Length: 209
Image 1 (tube, helix red, strand yellow):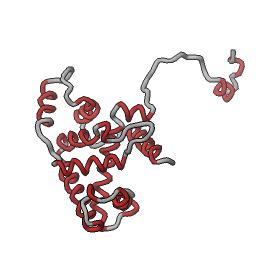
Image 2 (cartoon, one colour; image 1 turned 180 degrees about the horizontal axis):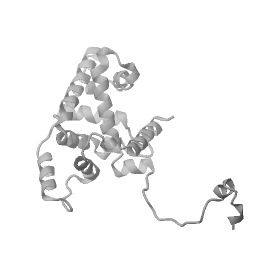
Image 3 (cartoon, rainbow, N blue to C red; image 1 turned 135 degrees about the vertical axis):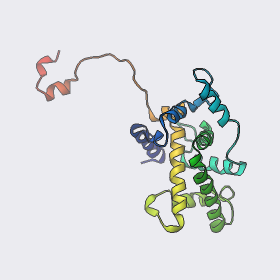
Image 4 (tube, rainbow, N blue to C red; image 1 turned 90 degrees about the vertical axis):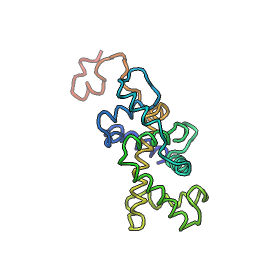
């Protein structure tokens, strides 16, 4: 299976299972769905507008954290010939919004980014954004798979699991991500009767016209 096909499968399973919103209350899930335009004013109640203004009034990630986050989400969902990368559809903005809206995610994200830099310094003598592409992949390969849970990687694994979930949630709630899944929703169609193979299965071939 190609890497992007695997990501597509993850996106489908997350949408189908409701995993996209498993961390959210109903109110927060609504905000995730509508975050495609975080500045949207129309159709919102006053408390919703005030909450959005509050969340947009400050920045959580510092410039270095933001640079690292952008690099990470693009390693998780890179651009290809069919679709844009995670950063192209503003997944870092989505993650920024979510961690401000859900403060319990702030420390795990900040500590995880710090762990990543510390491990990169220890192994390759440079912070994550300052090492080579192959070295970055080497680190992610060590924390991307639950079966690799060794004590020294536990924090990295927990961080990457959270980041991967947030990245997929952000990507597959954009127009590009939904197009990539091939999701079309409910659409009117022409009813042409019960399919012939179903009629044959139930010995109702006399109804075939």
